[in-house]
Image 1: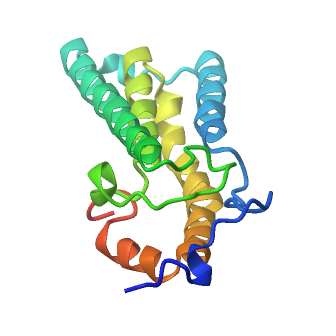
Image 2 (image 1 turned 135 degrees about the vertical axis):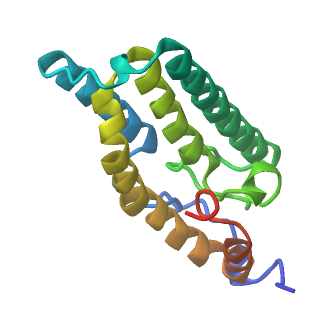
Amino acid sequence: MDNPTSREHIVTKSSSDHPDGIVFPPLIFLSALVIACVLQWLLPLGFIAGIRDAWRLSADAFMTIAGLSIMASGRRTLVRHGTNVSPLQPTTALATDGIYRWTRNPLYVGGTMLMIGIALVFGLDWLLLLTAPSFSVLHFGVVRQEERYLDQKFGNTYRRYRDSAPRYVWPI
């Protein structure tokens, strides 16, 4: 068992005590939404609008409610553990219970699901198409940086957790 006074568990007040992601994660989702709206206006595709309303709205309701629920659960768990929700702030504790047993990144999984829900409800084909590139930017520019930060900060405790919970959802 790790010694709680070991170097890897010391919480510092340094301004560099946070992951160095390339961008604040919500800006990735917001940028995709803005770009999708502009592209939809300039070059509408009409694929989503062609889906029967009952199917589209059912899928939208599921994705939106699931996405918001997953995000809210992740946020509540972080707050309960007394750590910062924002990746611009230091992580002071690992959250490994609740939704974090099922995914190490519930805020990003939920945000992606919400983005798909928004695409479906508003018929934004471009937002659906921009989901994969947005998720790639999130993965390589934010999540990988956060993982390095947590590994350096919490060492074996984080590694054990990383090995027990999927990064996003099983089997991805």
